[in-house]
Image 1 (cartoon, one colour):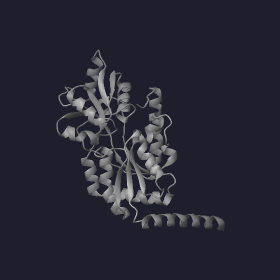
Image 2 (cartoon, helix red, strand yellow):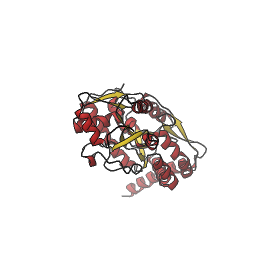
Image 3 (cartoon, helix red, strand yellow):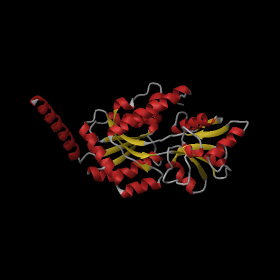
Image 4 (cartoon, one colour):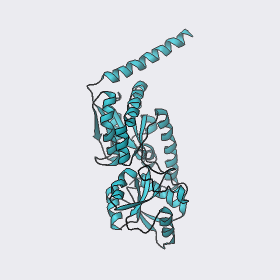
Length: 322
């Protein structure tokens, strides 16, 4: 019995030392490493979070953009860094839960190589069409597509991307025939959608908001179980009688799996406090990202479930990364 108490006390002391060491390492900046380019939705969330997170940690927090290789560059940069909590990977569900099944010989396994810190945002997918498209909602859009003798051309930000997987969900749920047109990113997809070369695209709410607010695109369906607070007038697919189109392109923070658990807990506490800040939450919502935090355990469970879900769809349709 005494030995058990001694071991527990020793473990608690070790955790306390690790936590104290992290808190006192004020001279070393914390990097939020993002796998995406400046100006995009993930970068927006990272930069919105960084300043307040720095206040919570009492350390300088900077955003380090490492785009490329379907998210692998950002992941590997985080793993190369010292496992002391000073390098935090911010990623969307794609690089975290989709890539391990999509990319042959992926250089990392998120569940094995990373420790979950916290969710930071739910970033739901929304189906958008051109502003002049006659469809009032997704149900009407699908009805028109099914009546067409030709497959309806639909854009995505790349083969195996979340917008592509959402499109497959819509196709399987409705029996409509779509012609998948992959682009290298969402910007050229939006350009061709507004130009009439394609008929629609799934995209993050944060990405479509400026175009919807500017009257260039029209949102017709939310791929989630409930409506988005930034688009309260847009019905979910389920509300429109279309089942099983439910895609959450969540954003979350991870550190190397070698990071001390006490440091992970310190980071989780700081992230949750930063997201709860009214100014931070309001700014995220204005940009289309729904603020959302979690415990490390909740994020681990979500990662496991989504990895299995997307792996099954990728395998069934034999989807390969470009």
